[in-house]
Length: 79
Image (cartoon, rainbow, N blue to C red; front, side, top):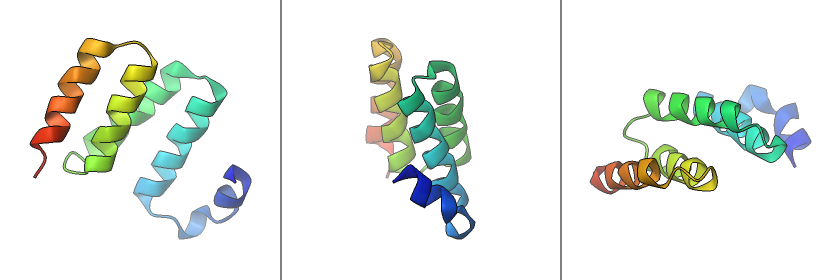
């Protein structure tokens, strides 16, 4: 699936390209890169609920529960 998506990256939005890079980093187990990418995703798209949700996901998977809870509260506040 990732190979197919990567072949068609030219048609993807900037958000989708960044989200795919995050997915690949997570699949590789690259915690540092995943956290860097999700921070970039949220910084670029602060009002995008899916970006905030991805941040909660990454933080939870990395055992950073207090930060995940804070991110979840920000997610809940997005209108």
